[in-house]
Length: 353
Image (tube, rainbow, N blue to C red; front, side, top):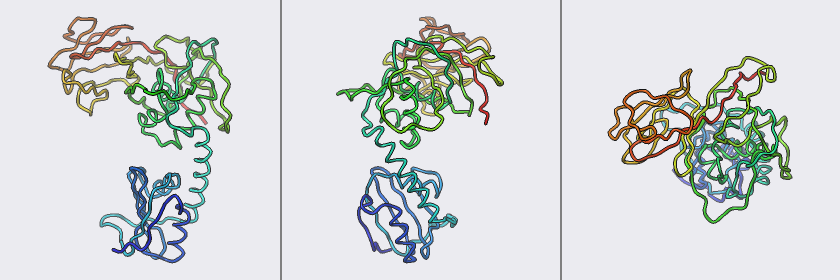
């Protein structure tokens, strides 16, 4: 293996490198390093036969993602062959370059919207008007994550979503007047939230929102109406006749820690404990690995202890069996205190074309 070319990935972007190694029918591996990301593109006689990185699941996605990597370094090693067990792929370089350049142009447009990830996002408070709002799972998840306030970087890390996917969704919320941006402060408290599931359903609620002038930026096509901040209150439900389509009423709850972290409860059940494999993982020595379980039934949310060492308490009373939770109940697992709220009741309907 011999490195025959290396340089700045910022000065020699991916489309130029792909064209160069393809035109001169090279065989080897192009390695690109950018921050904590590392990717490799394999060539055989000028054809791209495989690409891999920790940032994307397959060769086409890897190449598409690399078009928006902000700089870094590259090196090309001649004679490198595919590792054993990896099948050769058929990749159209011209199609990859065309799609990648389009994504890069879109990325540059997004960067004009949010040039700094230290910008603080907050949900609009003290709403003055009411409106019917529909939202997707992604949009609802983002609002729950933002909570009281969140930097754009914190939000991206929490959701584990690339900026190219996240920024348009955040921009929709902002242009709809549901969230606002603020200048960074010296210290931002980091809260830990958990993802809401995205099951392809659309959620419709009627919260109160305050409309604010949107920032000057390109508007996304057919942006849907979006929801208010995730207040732990009961919003007014939209009448079925106002929404249309098959509907299912769904109760949504939450657990809130003393530091403000919010754990949304939207799935049928949640395992809670210290082990990271739990749906809600709480890293405290007083919490058992599998401490408690919360299940949603037709009456509401029910909590039960799962043979924990230090017990599960509701309003100071140790529970010995399943216990139905009421709004504002105080739940204690070991030394960890949380407040349960019925966050909202929503009507879900299947997405239609």
